[in-house]
Amino acid sequence: MASVFQHPQRRCFGRAPLFDPEAGIPVIEPPGSGPGWWAGAASALYDDETHRFYLYYRLRRPRSEAVPDRGYVCRIATSADGQHFETIWQATKSDLNTASMEKGCLLKTEEGLWRLYLSRVDPEDRRWRTDVLEADAPDGFDVNRLHRVFTAADVGEEGVKDPYVFTVGRLYYALFSYATRVPVAAELEAAKHATADIFNTGLTKSSTALATSSDGRHFTWHGEVFAPRPGGWDSYAARIGSLLWTPPVFTAFYDGSASVAENYEERTGLAITFDLRHYQRVTTAGPALTSPHASGSLRYLEALVVDGVIHYYYEYARPDGSHELRLNRVPLEG
Image (tube, rainbow, N blue to C red; front, side):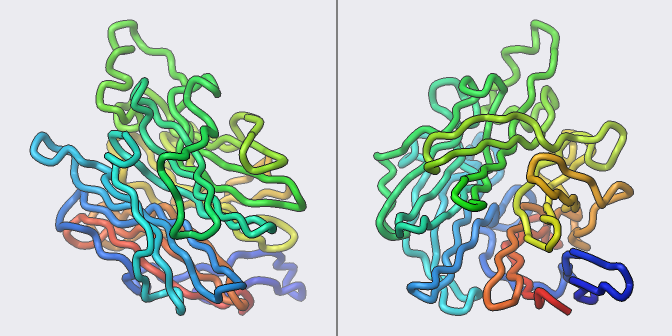
């Protein structure tokens, strides 16, 4: 795909350059072969002080009686070139006292403090929650010092996960995937969290909410900003995972699915926003980015700009049905 950013002579403004998913470079291999073996849910950061890339990701095994691990380990790795990574930190699901963990978000403050916003299943009620860890360096996070950001009960919903945190001016913004409350028969209430993953039950919808904060630790929940679209290819899930500043708008990359049958195998759509509160879909007819293999899943896309080049990290379905973490580099302006 051609990289088109600004062509005012054609009245083309703020168009995000995309990429050929199949041309991406594998960065992290899944821990096994076949459906349910995943490497992905990435969050990437480049640090100007150390001149290094930092990458958060999680590994997952299939849900089964023999191996009920699901998201069983999350890691932070570092790289000089954004492609070849070495692990510097990890936490297992036992370390975090959880049935599973998912997408996190790395952030470094202007004061030099490192934060890792992390989503995991709450051991108290088996609903997804989000916490934050703080450290002086990205290899120094202590899982015994988790600070609560939001539980499901805090926001009055069925789960809150997959944080994407950033700052505009001095204000922190956070986008979350959350499980909405959907009316169900009384006999189905107990089934919502029996497996500790309501998103895979069909008893909810996966939507996107906004929260803001002045300090990055204490957030105000503003609620839904981007929702599944009835009758669309994204009618079950509409989960914004990252943003790219394409003046005069932000381009949002979101994971969409039509039903619970496509849960775990979402594909990537596009939306734009001028104010981070109101989003307009671009991809109404179908997803913008897919894998040519297996389920077609391409999800949890992260867009990181370093030295005028967009580093797209994305979870990508392989021919055997597993998911690997890939990298595709695209010039910001074509």
